[in-house]
Length: 494
Ligand SMILES: Cc1cc2nc3c(=O)[nH]c(=O)nc-3n(C[C@H](O)[C@H](O)[C@H](O)COP(=O)(O)OP(=O)(O)OC[C@H]3O[C@@H](n4cnc5c(N)ncnc54)[C@H](O)[C@@H]3O)c2cc1C
Image 1: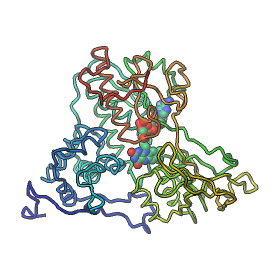
Image 2: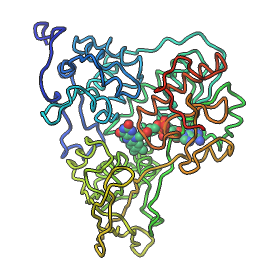
Image 3: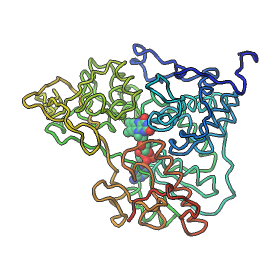
Image 4: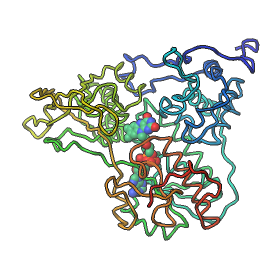
C-alpha cells in the first residue's frame, strides 16, 4: 500500500458489514488440522478498525470481562499504529492472539456495540478479528512486549493449574515482583487451550510463545504434577506465602443411560485430549496413545466442546459424523461461528433427539445409538424451551463411536484432599469471598473451578482479580481493595 492509499487519521469506514475474513474452504479443511479462518492482513484490519465510530458511551468496554479499552486500540489500528495498539490491549489482556480467536465476542463486546443493529443489516465492529490481527502481528514481527517486572518482593506464590486463569494470575504476580511457580497435572501447560480446543481453531504455537514469554519473566513451570496426588495442597501451602487454585472443570458428565461403559464411548475431554494433546490419530507410527479407528460416530451435545469434538472427528475421515442434540438449533449453546463451520464441514445434525441407550454390537463395543425424538415445550429455568419426548418415537443410528459432550464439573482430585476447603455442596465448585479468597486465608481460586464451565476471558478476568488480591494480601496482609466499587465484587463465600 502506498502512502497515498493509507487511511488518514480521521477516516471512517461506513460499511455496514465487517470486512470479510478469508477461510480455508470446507472441502479442503476437513482433510487437515490447519486453522480455518486465515485472519486479516494490515489493510483489512485497518479498514475494519475504521468502522468503529468512537462513540462516547463505549458500551464495548463494559461488555469486555477484562475491560479492554476497545475504542482506543481500534483508533490506533485505524492510524496503522499497530505496536501502540498492541500495547493498549496488553494493558488488560496478555493473550490477544488467543482471545481474538476463541472469545465469544458476539455475546460480549460486539453484542453491545453501538453499531450492532441487525434489524438494519448493520454488524458490530469486528473487535475479535482486529484483536486477533494484533496478536498475530506481534508474532510475525517478533514483537515481544515483555512487561517490566517490579523488584523482587521475596514472596513465593504457588499457582495450581496452567489454564487461562492460572496463566493470567502467574503473569500478573510475576510482574508485581513475586516468585511464581506453576504446578500442572499434564505434561504441557495451557489447560483447555492446549488439550481441548483443537489446532484448527487455536494453533498451539501461539500458546507456546506466550508461555515462553512468561518463562522469560521468571515464572517456573512444574509439569506432570497433579497436586493432591503428587503433593497434598496443605504441603504446598506450607512451602509458599500464598496459593492460587485454577484447576478448571475437567470432570466430564455422562448421560447415565445403558451402554455408556461399552468400548468406543469417550467423554469429549478424553477424545479431544487423545487427539489434540497426544496425537492419537497418528497411532502407532508417531504417537503412543491410540484413538479408535472411526467409521461412524455420534457426538452428543451442542456446546463448543461438542462442536470441537464433531469437527475433530470429521478430520479423522469417518463415513459420517452425527451431532445429536435434544433441543433445536436455536438453543444450541455453541458459538454461532462454530455451528456454522460444523454445518459447512458436513456434520450431520440430528436435532430434537435425546439418547436413551448405546447399543452393544455383541462384542462389548458400540454398535448403535438409540434416541428418543423430542419436541419443544415451555421454557425451563434456563429460559430455553424444554425438550419433551414424543411418545413412541424412537430412532437408531448405526455407529461404532460415541462421544459424550454434555458438560463437565470441577475435578475433585485436589479438593478431595482437603475436606475443610469450602465448596458448593451441589456443584463441587470452590467457594470464594469477594476478593477471590477461599476459606483458607492464604489460598485464592478463580476460573472454571469457581464458576463451573465458562469462558476463557472470564477465567482470565478472575485470574487477574485474584492476583491483585494476592498481591495486597502479601504486601498489606489484607486482600480487600479499598477503592473497589460494588460491581467489582464477585464472591460467593457466605
Ligand atoms: C473443548 C472446549 C472448547 C472450548 N471452547 C471455548 C471457546 O471457544 N471460547 C471460550 O471462551 N471458552 C471455551 N471453552 C471454555 C474455556 O476453555 C474454559 O472456560 C477455560 O479454559 C477455563 O480456564 P481455567 O484456567 O479455569 O481452567 P482450564 O483451562 O481447565 O485449566 C485447568 C488446568 O488445571 C490443571 N489441573 C487440574 N487439576 C490439577 C491438579 N490437581 N494439579 C495440577 N493441575 C491441575 C488441568 O490439567 C488444566 O491444565 C472451551 C472448553 C472446552 C473443554
